[in-house]
Image (cartoon, rainbow, N blue to C red):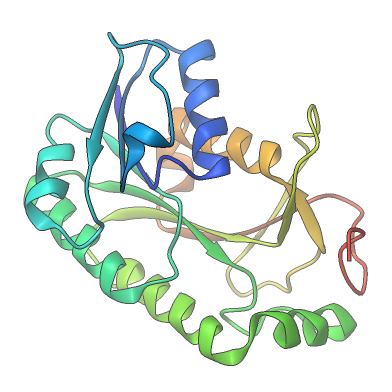
Amino acid sequence: MKMLILGAAGQISKMVTELILTETDHELVLYGRNLSSRISVKDPTREVIIEGDFNDQDKLKQALIGVDIAYLNDMSSPDATQAIVEAMEESGVNYLIGANVLGIYNEVAGAFGEWNTSMVGSTATQKYLKAAEVVEQSSLDYVILRLTWLYNQTGNEDYVLTEKGESFVGAQVTREAVARLITTIIHDSDKYAKTSLGVSEPDTDWAKPSFY
């Protein structure tokens, strides 16, 4: 299998890269701006860096050659998401995992929902929603990951999932857990196709994350 990581210098992207390299024999295409100065290749026989912008169709299509599945580390731009979806559809690459945020469907209730809205803001939330709609209305098989507030904790890979239409529960989750979830999806892609999943840590149904 060959996987494309869009936004490969992001923290979750780096964790996914490490898991893929240590636990599988998959190949990786690492895509993003100024990557040569931001990441280092550990296995040149399995990793290729392509530097480019999300809106650069030619570079995206170059990166998509031979790819089976793509991970998009940031869905904050509807235009960039649209460009990626179009490049994938034209290249015949059918599976996209995208990192989005909680709250785009007004699915976060109570005190935590109010706190989250005040922190993220309606303008940013609408951008994330429009990007999600671009993916949902495409021909792709997709998994949209609606991530709660993120932090790092080595060894903590615990997560719980909620589906679109269900209330979101959980104020925080580790990036390590999200990276583990992404690798799980890669290895059981049919099970997760055409889903929008809320991702949080068990037993964190609080008014705000512990680190705020």
